[in-house]
Amino acid sequence: MIGNIASKRINWIDNGKAIAVLLVGLGHYNCSGTLAKIIYTFHIPLFLFLSGITLKEDMSWKVFIKKRVKSLLLPYIFYSLLLELFRELITYKLDFVKHIDIVHTLKCIFINWRGTYSPYYWYIPALFITEILIFFIIKNVRKVNYKLIIWLAMIGLQFLKSQIIGVYLLPWDIDIILEMGQYILLGNIIWRHYRHYFNKYILESKFITIFIFIIGNVTLGLINSKVDLYFGEVGNYFIYIVSAYMGIVMICKLSYKINNSILSYIGRNSLYFYILQEFTFVFATKILPFMSSPIIVLRYISMIGVNFIGEAMVYIILKCKDKVKLLEKSTKMRR
Image (cartoon, rainbow, N blue to C red; front, side, top):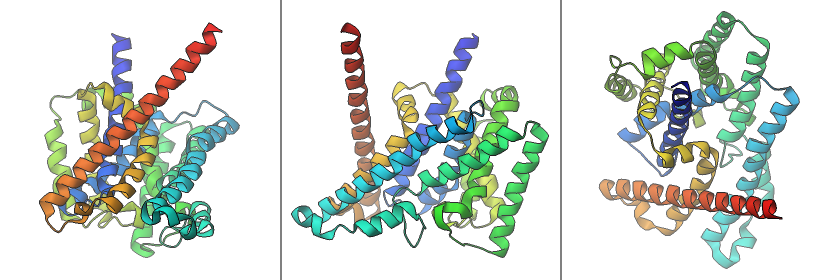
């Protein structure tokens, strides 16, 4: 019974990450209007919250940095360069070499200043820097009360920033580290210290239904102005925070009820789905004219269709990659 519960917990986390990355993909496909307002209230906070659940402090700094560089920074650099090459190839075809601005591309990757030198995958270095901060906190602060105080301080400082300074973009997403960090930290706190209560009173509760949080998230999302963490825009900060956490709980409960191997697989490989869906987006916007159709219904259908095809292609590519790895492993064992 315990094994089944543990397995289900892992599956729902993977399911949640899958839903988050699929929503990010839908948002990237030029999703606008009411649907975009709702999605943007919680899709990035959701992924950050789940990242906090899986963040572990039982390793040295050296091991942690090495793992994060390998899993985040190296893919970020490699796929950013590859995407720029792909974008120019799709746009200019055989003349693409003449149009590649390698200096500007490297500035975008390494200076990473949203709005000035905007990288394609701004979220990855932002996650890298934020996880370093949260790892430092959970590594050095053991008492849960102190962690909660730090979490509240993060929210308070970010609120003051939004009121006094407003939107002020900085290199390597330093301006939104506290905003991103509070979701990761709370996810970690809940999973490390209040997991039993979270499972019993949130995930497994029949009284607290998904519909309560759907209504709450949608209502607050529509009341608030559009949220976009890329530009540091959150509208009314109190409404934003409440709607974000309602969205997080909503998807967590939904993920807990789902048992789907494909969704779990997407969640386990969410970073690569996030990275590779951008290639599909570039291809679709350059090749398919109906992606920018003035007819709203056609545009929405095309966005969802292309998003689905793109995710399916990424799924097939990763599955083939896994098959090749298994084949290589079995070949080595035979030798």
